[in-house]
Image (cartoon, rainbow, N blue to C red; front, side, top):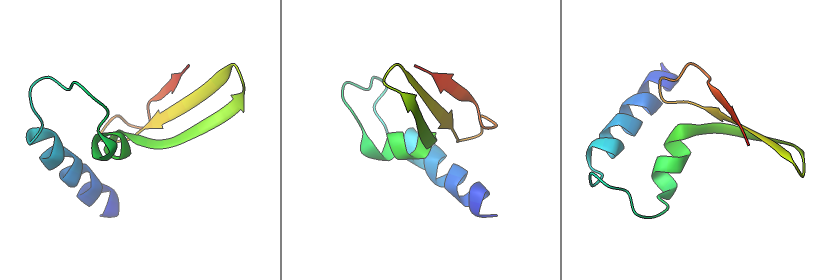
Length: 59
């Protein structure tokens, strides 16, 4: 139930955004990223939320 509320809040915050995001938005970031794991100076993995099913992006 908590996850559902987080996703609903995220969707509402995205609806209020302008069509083009031109700068960093802390609330958008917090709504998208569940966690960030630093494996070393050359590898960072972001785990996303917001209905992505725990999708991971490695940079």
